Every structure is written in structure tokens, then in C-alpha cells.
Length: 208
Image (tube, rainbow, N blue to C red; front, top):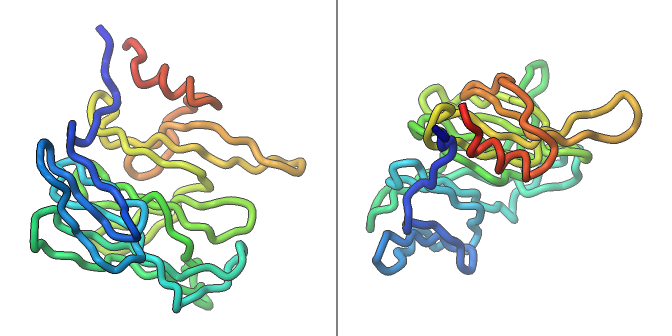
């Protein structure tokens, strides 16, 4: 028996960007414009397709990071129904003195957890790598997970809710090693998948 580990959010239901605006297209229906700022990117649907999370650029607000001067950026969530609520859930910020609060800027690739209570996202706070964070929508706490280049949430099967992450692993010698890892919903390592996309594809249909 082959276990299907990954699932599509919803067949035929998609989100897209046109001219910096978010559009939601229900199955067998016309596209619905969700935002109009002209500054939006990287939309992603919740598992139940009722919400979309996306990045909003902030050209007027910059933060100096290890990666240079970046847009502060914001994370927003919107209902996919016509006339639904749209609200900001996170604003980039400077590092807080005398605390463990890091500078956050240059957001990309936000993804909902399967219950839509968390949002995983990348932020470019260093010159050499992006970093993976998770935002808890209930506590509003942001927590660092690891250095990473990609993140995907598993939507069904044995590992529903877990993450596939392309981790950027520093070496003792100059350079980096990139490997795909399986992480649990809290961002803890479960096991290495491999270094190639073909390893991830094989993992998706591995026999258990």
C-alpha cells in the first residue's frame, strides 16, 4: 500500500498575483480580486481554501539587515469570499536591544499550517542565507526555526502538518550544504530526506 504524503490544497482552486494584486479563482468560476494595493506577492491558500496569506511590500519603510537595506515588509491574511476581511498579521521590525528579538525583513513564501493557526515564512536577515520562522496567530509570537531556502507544508497522509524544508547548513570550512529535511509542526527535525528534488518526489510516494 502506497501512502500519499502530500496533498493539493484544493483541486482547481488557486491564488495568483497580477500587477501586485491577489486574485482567488474558485473551482469552475471566475477569478475574484482580493487586494488592490499593487504591492502584494507570494500568495498561499489555507487547507480549507477560506484564507489566503501573502506578502505586502513596503517601499517607504526600510530596515538595515545583514543582507543590506531591505523593505520592512508585512504579512497579511485575507478571506477568499467576496467582501471578506483583510488584515495585517506581522510587520517587519528592527532588532530589539537587550532581547532575543531579531531584525525581521524581506519576507517570502508564507505558508499556513494545516489548521491555519500558524504561518511559516522565510525572512532574509543575513547576507548568506534566508531564515525560516513561524508566527503563532493566537499568541502573536514569532519563533526562529532554522536557516532555509524553501518550505512546504504537508497537507495529508501520515505526516500531515509536518514540513519539508530545504535547510541551508553551514560547514566548518567556507561554504554551505543544502539538504531537504522533514520537520514536525513545531520545527523540530524528524529526519533527512535527501539533497535533490527527486529525493523529495520519492518521499512523497514512499511505501510504509
